Length: 86
Image (cartoon, rainbow, N blue to C red; front, side, top):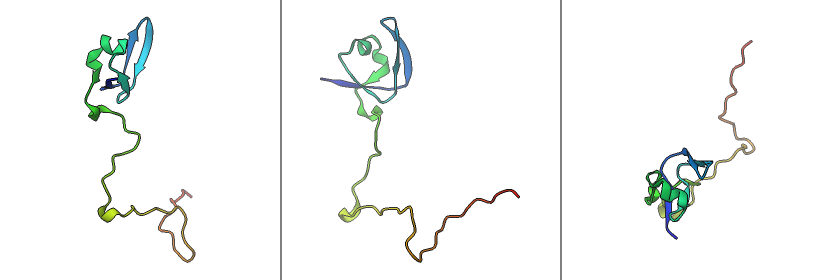
C-alpha cells in the first residue's frame, strides 16, 4: 500500500459530503478522494504529522536530565509568584 501525505489543511466536497483533510495526515494513495484531488497530497514524508518531535541521539548514550515538579528537602524554589494588584 502506497501512502501519501496531505500538504495542507483543507475542506473539500467529495461525493456530496464535506470532507476535512488535516495537514500532515496519511492517506492511501489508491483512495478515490486522493485520486480526485492529487494536488493536495505528496509522497514526501517531510509533510507527515509528527506526534513526537524528532530526537537526536544522546551524547555518550546518556539520558536527558529529568525535570522535577517539586523541590527536594532544603532546596529553595526558583519560581516567583506574580505580583497582585493591591
